[in-house]
Image (cartoon, rainbow, N blue to C red; front, side, top):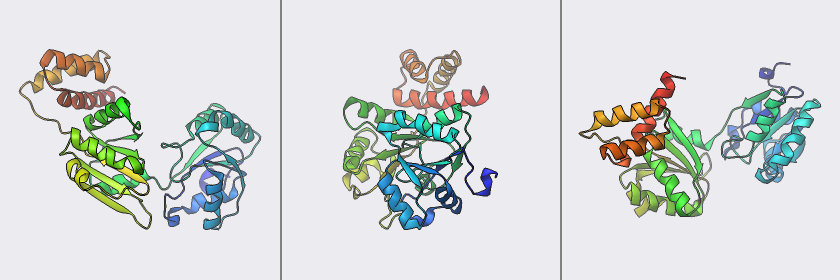
Length: 289
């Protein structure tokens, strides 16, 4: 049977998106796959069992598949696929492998010649992008920033420098800290916070970083944050900066290295040079795939 028919095929792996809150978001195809596979690899088998119960689905065999056991468990699941079992991979909610376990299993399965199929559905990343009112022709997803210290600061500076909309995940108890940092570094940057998307208390907050830090959102529940693209300010030496960056990037320098050299040669500020270097690097990649 062809995978598009909706029924699981023996020896195939299915990466299945599950609801991030509203159970009505499960697709008919996902229901067929989840109920028909021989095995479900689940980030949390208890929560997976509750999901199957709430959806009224027959519960197949389940195997725990989370970060700490991924390296050990992936080969075991591949072996079961090679024996002809059909397997569905699910995370606690949303789309597996997006800031959730799964990519090692997908890589191992593909390396073993096993067919892997996406069963698309809910994603907090895409849900926020759809309603944030920010440009989405290009965007970056950085997942969770480091929790503290210098690495958190550097990751935030990188996010703020990006010339496209950037989406972050954040733990509820760190949301206020994130907004304070954003306000300190880019007070006028537009920020959209999605809380409990698709759930009963779904709320969107938008405003400048300074405004949201001054009157912070309720931090309870699942949090997704979108940052507007970095503004690219015009400058007197704009042509020179563009020319030097283009030459350096074409010679194979990294974005960071090209930015650093250009800053030294022109005196242009990092907040001007780095976003431009990112944009030019993307343009060169498009022109020379």
